[in-house]
Length: 139
Image 1 (cartoon, helix red, strand yellow):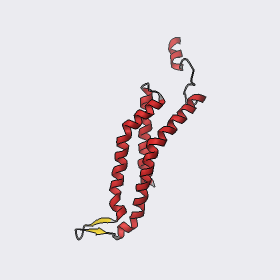
Image 2: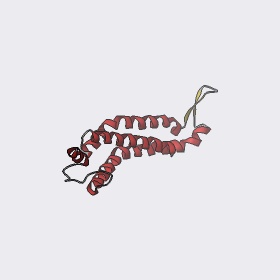
Image 3: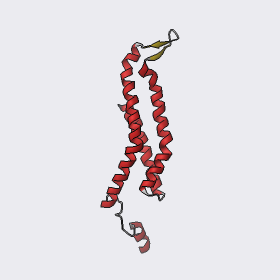
Image 4: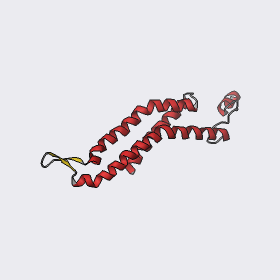
């Protein structure tokens, strides 16, 4: 669970961080979320794909016996760890889809709600000027 959560949370944080950077550059929230998803798609898929491919031998029970220099099928260690590998493989597959689809959708939804109610320092739609613009005029 910890290894799975580490990969998924890292991917989500990087995706949302890039979305925020694009917003600071002047993009709208939906446009920034789409652009961030498109830009971060390859790294997220590569991270998940390499982890899944690395766990396939463990899940199928293939191992290499270094004492006899032979490939072993269904060794004692593979029987012990195969259920964990299968859980991580399928969990990472589902979590990758959630990271690329659900996380940006929730971010956009919560961002709109926060801006509608003026929470988190966001301004309500229809406000003509930001606080920074008013302060600059007074200066």
